Image (cartoon, rainbow, N blue to C red):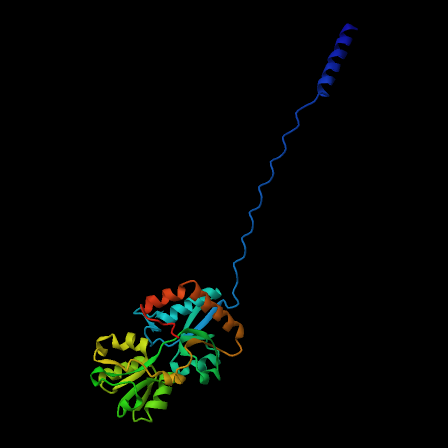
Length: 284
């Protein structure tokens, strides 16, 4: 009996211990938070922008020794593509085929020193200007000529086909007695001046300085009277803009906003100083 009581006592004690308070298990550590998903990269309405250039117009458009497009127009195009979050794809095109190629959808825009003229606006649309420089008649500096049309009587002048300079030369210099010869590319004009087949050219003052006057071949030549007289600006339009198809109004507006942006953020000035330091390319 005593042993039974002892056994019962031990069982009771064990039961009391089993019913006593025990430590609760530590709560499980929270699962690590999922990393926030990266914001999707902004998409462009124009992932790729095909840009036409005539690479014979230094310092605006030309090709490096490695065959890469370069120049003021090219860098402006790249800056505008950056603003649109687009990839620039350059398409080389002879100048007189520029507008037909745009209308045939070979490319999306012309960024190649195309002046905004009323005649061209009948066929294509334009952004506002992204530069504006005058033109001049280049002949031998020893002639000491002014810019008046009568001074070029008997002179044979090469011009870029379908350019504003050709329009001016045919409209004003040819009636005054000059012979006007159109060329497919401006650099071909300089080769024929060098060979003696031409007396000179009508060209943009910045381009002719970079492409001819500053070279050994152009050392004996100069702009007659410095520039074409202001009263003939009707031939040259309201500056140089980006040309587009008339229906591409959203692209035009986006490029206009891009031009303003690169003017405001200093990129335009940086590009201008790189290619034509010290020259007012923006113009009036």
